[in-house]
Length: 286
Image 1 (cartoon, helix red, strand yellow):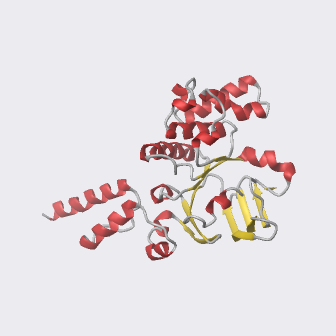
Image 2 (image 1 turned 180 degrees about the vertical axis):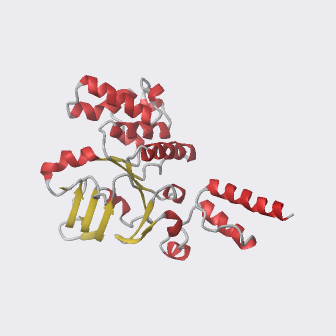
């Protein structure tokens, strides 16, 4: 069996608000994330999901317990560069992540900081822009781009560092529906190429794309499993102030009227396929 890329062992984390007030945000979290997985993390506001994500590359360090990335303990500052080479992060606000006035210069920024040779830098920039579908925008000013395009540039900047894992902390929350679709298409392509994806999101349709969903509540893992299983636990999700994908809600409503209709669907394309299947059965029956 593969070794986990990221391992959390009994992790708790406190935010110190002042000299006397401490707030515990994560509580005894143990978790393994394996190479090539696509993991979605969901939870209502204040549940601790973004705090959890910031532990995956050492932005935050546990108050208690340990986090290991490719075997390196994030508490050990000697391994900070090794850890962040392996796990890259993309955040919520695209504009806050862009530092240059030309797209390809922005993608080059991190590479310049670590002294990548020019020939290798050019190769990485070209590959990163190609991976996110932004090659034709390489000479554009970022402020002329849409929100989704800016976020794709931010992803390219991380990909140029050649990480093994990409963590997205609410990276689509500031985007419109078109921008979210653009980012999801990029993530699907990267996952198909073998990259580990960890996506924090409050959009249930995005979580449905993952191999595994973690539901965070009050700093603990309340549920985890394949999205099809998680989204059938609708009563518990409601108690946790979470929704279900639109496709799952629609499938459930149709199932109430057409018992043969599968109720555990999570993608719109599955709704279409199931409608075709049911219509074919009825047509064959006469």
